[in-house]
Amino acid sequence: YSNLEQETGQSTGIKKCGFIEVATTQDRLEEFRRVAAFNRYCGVDVEEISASEVESLFPLAKTDDIVAGFYVPDDGRVNPVDVTMALIKGAKMYGAKIKEGVSVKTTTQSNGRVNSVVLEDGRTIQAEKVVNCAGMWARQFGERSGVLIPNQAAEHYYLVTDKMDDVDPDWPVLEDPSSYTYIRPEGAGLMIGL
Picture 1: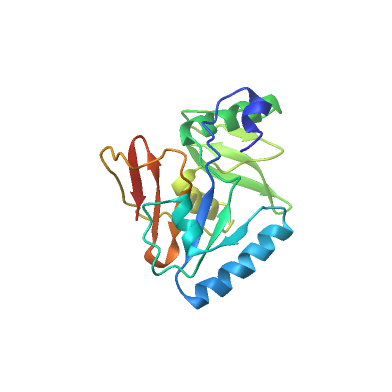
Picture 2: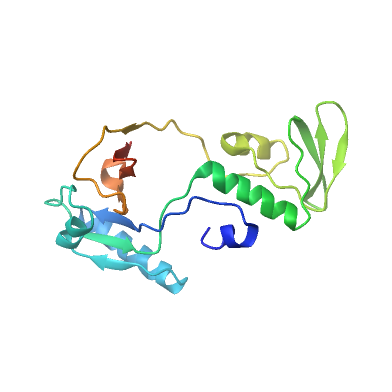
């Protein structure tokens, strides 16, 4: 998403605030070290940091159980609606045609590739490429064409706190997989996802 706004002229709301994933057990540490090595191989700047460095980057974090953190300074977050609009605009710029307000009944295939969609009203739209943008229904939509999409929608809870004077909006996103939690600044408070 770093270049999407430049490419399309459409805002993405990108904020490069960084990302920290914390390991609280030796097993997680070993796993995250492997993932970090692979990410570095792929060109992602990720560094292993100490619990005290986690605390310096996110001062409200409880760090007494943290073995290490893995920090990606160039990571961040975006506004999902803005990104969607930028992706649509970019797709159109490269020749995609977007059909809104229609329901797809099924798809047709040739040589193992989806090459058209059949709408609920019976119309067929031929396409060189079909993109499944069904969001949380992508898995079920893919199944209609015999395509396995290894995603499953899951209920997600989060809360947003009231204003907190100690919160800096430039803090990174902090994720603790062992407690299934992420925390990030939101407005003048925090968003805590569970």
